[in-house]
Length: 177
Image (cartoon, rainbow, N blue to C red; front, side, top):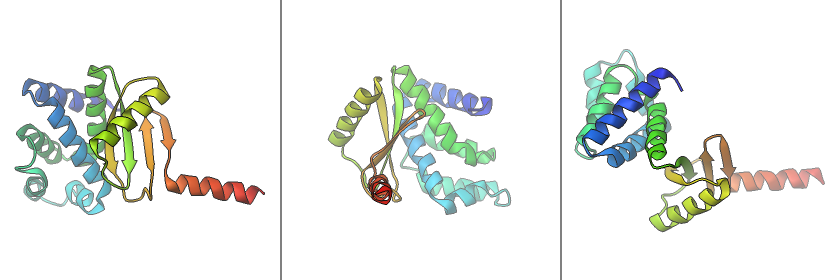
């Protein structure tokens, strides 16, 4: 991670903590960044150097204005205004890692095809914590490319329990016979 990303993440962390909104800002920022990551149209608009900053701010307001904490809206608007919208996913990851580290945990990004309810997230967090030997903070990303099951990433460790991976494994087994 670059010094710029770490610097922005530290500033966002301190600002959100000072405002008493750290958990909310971190969650909202993560969700916004993953939305940007998954939407090529949104990403293209916010990173287009030819699109006026005012238009980009309007997009940010439409996306999160009134639904997110004021700190979140202002930080996203600042990052976009500075021409760093493409850095939002990396910033969100760095911020999530910083918040989890404060709690003595690691971030586990879990990709699923559907939204998960809280009891399922809690069971998943317990299973991942047991599997890797450290407490984790689960961040769920709804990803339509995951046909079924889950794909979890904790640091450099990837646990692929997706239907796609299981079918691929079955195909490899059958082809080897």
